Image 1 (cartoon, rainbow, N blue to C red):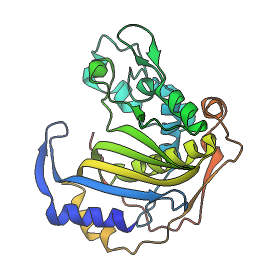
Image 2: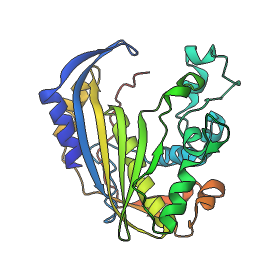
Image 3: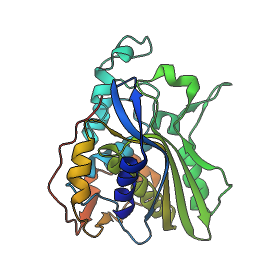
Length: 283
């Protein structure tokens, strides 16, 4: 919690006002933020200075793990995060690559599980990583990337948190995740949950110990219509201790994650929090 609050205060103290073309709003912006989460100690980074939610973030990442390309499949898992981008994005609605209602195109998990090779066939990045780590192998290239500029035109949205690199030291697994852009009041906690979850679940299915997850954000910002709530409300609240993420121990393989696992296989213990804050969301 403290590093989250320190980042928010840093943006307020040091940030530069930048006009955002997509949203037509100003953002108070800093470049380069580094966060880390002690996954091995199960210090789950769920924000406590406002009521926060974690199941939709895990549900969305389960969809990435499964390589989903349809918002309806994400909704079945419990994530409605792709509804607007799949069905209300004007440019995507007019895109000849769109297959119809709820289609997202070649974004995120599609790239992670089915990266098209120019000479034919595809690469399953995630399976290679899991297979290697299960055998105790780290070739210093255990990288899952969703960022494929050659296919941006074939999807409804280019990825924000785009690359995840696993590193193995002995029997302890580490993760470094890279994010190009982050709405700190609203989006960051969602992304924090996903980074923590990804290391925890991959460590579990590969039989490794979880170490720390490192989360690097390039452009961290607070929108102008969020600033007052962050400065005058959230930053004046005292944080509570971190809760713990409980994962069903019966999840033992990538196939389990691809088939029967749901958000009901995850729960949080010892979560204390302040009241919700209704931050404006910028589309």
